[in-house]
Each structure stands twice: as C-alpha cells, then as structure tokens.
Image (tube, rainbow, N blue to C red; front, side, top):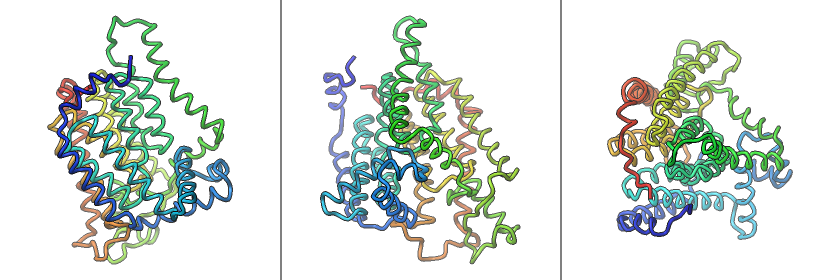
Length: 424
C-alpha cells in the first residue's frame, strides 16, 4: 500500500485554509531573523563549542566515544553543522542557529500538513521557536521525525512509525520515555481482516525490524558500549532538579531553606539547584514516586490501548510524570510534552486549553532562568518568595489534575473520543 496516496492527499489539502498558515510561516521567519544571533544559554554555547572542537580533534566516532550523553545521530548533526560552516565560510554558531530555523520550519510544515490547524500549529511553533532559535536547545532537531512517526502510527503504518520514532530517539533519548505507550498501541491496533498469528507476527516484525536495523547500524559505527554508556550517563545527572520547575525544585527550595549547612543557603531569596548523591535513600524514594505515577499512566494505557487518542493521552501524562518527579530533569525537557499536548488537542478540541497551559509551563520555565535570549532576567524574581517556587507548585498541581483526570476518571471518556485529526 502506498504511503502517500495522491488522490487522498489531494482531498486532504483541499480542506486547507492556506492564508492563516502563511501568516504563521511569515511570523515564524520574522521572529527567527530577529533572534537568529541571540546567544542562547551559556550551557548551550559552551556545549556546542566543546563538541565542535572535540569532533575536529578526535573525529566523529572518537568524539562520541570520549564521553557523550546524547545519542549518536545528534553528534552526526553537529558534525554536518561544522562541515557546512567550513564549506560556506560561516561561523559555526550562526550555522547552528540556521539549522535550528530549518528544523523549526520543517516541524511546522509537518504538523500543519497533518492537522491543517493553523492556530494549533502557531501555538506549537511558538514553543519550538523559543526553545530552539531563541535559546539554542537541540530539541527542535527531533520534533519533525517524532510528529511524522505519530502520523504514521495513526495511519497504521507500523514500519514507518518504527523507523521515524527510532530516528527521534537516536537524536535525543527523551522519546524513549513514551515508547512503551506507543508500542502498546501499535501491537493493539485492531486488524483490518480477521486476526491471526501470522498477521500479529508480521506486525511485530514491522515494529521491531526498522528500530533494530538502526541500533545495529549505529552500534557497528560508534560501538554498542559507547551508546549504552551514553544512555547511562544521561540517566545519572547528579542534580535534584536541573532548573526544571517540578516537585524536585520544591524539594530543592526546602533543602536550602532548612539544611543550608549541607546544601547551601538561599542567596538574596533566589533558589539555585543542588547537587546530590544518587545513592542516597531519599533520592531513591523520590524516584519511586515517579515510577508510581508513570505506571499509573501505563496501566490506563492498557485500558485504552486500541485508541490512538488514548495512546497520546497516556504518553503525555506518562511523560509529565517523568518531568515532575524524576531526578536530574532539566528545564528544556518539557519540550516533548508540548508536542504531545498539541497532537492531543488536534485529536480532541476540548484539550486545547491544556495544550496552551503546557506550552505556557514550558516557556515560563525557560524564561524564569534564561530570559528571552539566554541571559538571566535583569531584575530579581523574588516577590516574597522566588517566583520559580510558585511556578513549580502550580506545575505540580496541574500535573496532579491531569493525572487524576486520566487515570482515575477520564479513561472511558477519552477512549471513545472522536479523533479530529484527519487520517488522510
């Protein structure tokens, strides 16, 4: 069966309202030009310089094996950025930012082509733009392949879903967090014909083979041990909260407030992150809280596994469980949730307000620490208490509402909700 059926695509795009989408693209380009030279966060600029120098000195494979905590495809992207900069005689940072603009436009086009919803596309593009072009985070690189993988899953193109989702994971590890929800749906899609062992085996092959080919290919080039070590390092950041406004940021505040001799006092009312020993018992207890909420979402996913809308809902809540309660989460990790929230809003219009809230949560988290261009705010964020604490408390309360709405109350309603995003 063809991936792109021309008559179906023609009918699909005949429904499109092109003028609102053109406005979104125009604004996106203008804003990109405005902050193309914005410095981004200090961590991003130092990280970029370190990697480019490392690749030039050790080579692509040597630099990755030296101590990466990112998947191998991201290093390939940086390698290409360096080569393009050299060929075009452009400085590396500008080339990097241009590549983020290209990723932004590609993602915007993919999402709009799927949903034909200019307003929702504009909402998502705003978050993509601020995260990537303005502040320089790498998340935009995997956004388009993740969106396309979800489109393929809705269309029941399992092999294409597996390949595109694997590419997303090879750019950044975070999509692995939602893999159980999507895989469960992929194997639970009702067959078009009468079910049989052969049909199930074929579906499992389509699901496993593309991802396995990618794993083996990258393992042959970069080494399986280097990839495993990279994933392990990404899970061992010795920070309670890496500036993520979540439950652990609240714990950070209380540790600095009540145990200043061990964790450091609050300076001028502003809370700063604390480093921890991952072997401490209470750290493990917090991870158990994350596992509890994550498994709750996964349990609901079993109940709703045949519904694509249900899979997206459970993926979103499961990922928010990671962001709110896991150890070592960073401020930009909420990025993936904005994509899932936008997709869920495309499936069910009553989820639009939630999408706005999650995009707001993501952007406010970034602004609280890095302003609009990568530099901290020039004024004190203290209003009786550091406002980041207020934001973190609101985020946790919103998550508890989302989680209870899905896991305790909303499963039956969402499982039968119509899927508004067209399948064409």
